[in-house]
Length: 64
Image 1 (cartoon, rainbow, N blue to C red):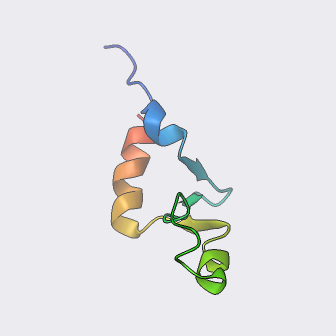
Image 2 (cartoon, rainbow, N blue to C red; image 1 turned 180 degrees about the vertical axis):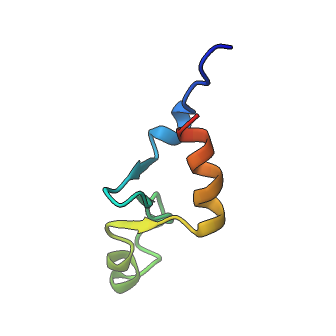
């Protein structure tokens, strides 16, 4: 049986930490930035951990 392929779309959006958690960029930073306010926009910096349900599905797609 051939190897399963990694889901490339997900692999470009998510990375795995050393402890095995999956993190991604936060949403809502794409456009309409002036309407969001500085404080809200600053709070969207950095990465966030995937929710447990999403992480379970994502790990299957990444580690086939």
